[in-house]
Image (cartoon, rainbow, N blue to C red; front, side, top):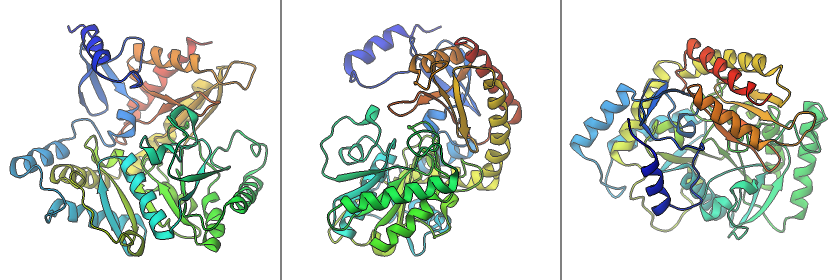
Amino acid sequence: MTDPTPLLSRHRQVLPDWLALYYDRPLEITHGEGRHVWDAEGNRYLDFFGGILTTMTAHALPEVTKAVADQAGRLIHSSTLYLNRPMVELAERIAALSGIPDARVFFTTSGTEANDTALLLATAYRRSNQILAMRNSYHGRSFTTVGITGNRNWSATSLSPLQTYYVHGAVRGRGPFAHLDDAAFTAAAVADLEDVLGQARGGVAALIAEPVQGVGGFTSPPDGLYAAFREVLDRHGILWISDEVQTGWGRTGDHFWGWQAHAQNGPPDLLTFAKGIGNGMSVGGVVARAEIMNCIDTNSISTFGGSPVTMAAAGANLAHLLDHDLQGNARRVGGLLLERLRAVCAGVPAVREVRGRGLMAGIELTRPGTDRADPEAAAAVLEAAREGGLLIGKGGGHDTAVLRIAPPLSLTVTEAEEGARILAQALRTIT
């Protein structure tokens, strides 16, 4: 057995204080297989968070492992200054899947960098530094992406090179429109968007929005809201950036991309992705119409974006996902899991709402008898789930506390049942 305390002490000596760790007794994960991981003490856990929605298909997926080893045995790195067959092949596939006409793809190493690049493209194309973002949003930790993050828990500074206007609509169950039905909610959010645009001087560059807010607690608007926004945006020439870092690749079950729940007025102008496509490898990127992607009139490269090894891994991972219809599995098993979660939460006074779609579920906790968030309860359930052999995440906005559940898309029915059972036991600790 390995005592984790010395490693924790070393972590605290050399890494930032603000680098968050889960659990009172932090966990060192040493290896994984399928939907399970093991810690340094030999304990086995069912993984319902996947490295923050990143282990999309399975831990130690043989196809990905082999692709990495084969490519590393030939060439690990070259940069974008040279032709790169794995990068071209993956870009061709993603462009075709994106739904964006005349699509071009630029690869990055993370979702933060992907969103940062999308902001660069949109502001350059529109010659404006004004951005519309959604309240309760999260788009990354860089200087520009923090500047458009509508969640104070993750906004390290109010300084920004961008002028950001925040719009209502991404949170269905809270806020001034929560009491309305879906049609009235959408109409009110559109009216709010129109009002916000009346405050902006000149042309706004873009709206950036997560179809399902990840860090914000897996909240989402009524289907079709961003299509209704699109009618307003198009009148003003404003671009739509869909942040698919957490919703892409079929996780929501019903759609391959989150934006497809809002597709009545066509695809977004730009789409960002990361996390799951690499199945743990550092892969992100932007898809945009050629006229937008090509608006940059200076030289640019990416040293590590599009690395031969990460591209080989992502290509193998995407092929596995499509060949095994993991989107369909997310719809079927995710639907079952949501049913089980709603059943086990029905008798828990602290549970305000169980929400989500596909293999992307959130359990919002409040102090019983009130509508006030209970972050202490969320932390307690996180600990209890770990003791029961289940790893989950947590999140939420400034006024919410949410358990985040997002297993690999290959989750089985048996594993879904097991996870729901462990969560039921963990929730009993706060009743």
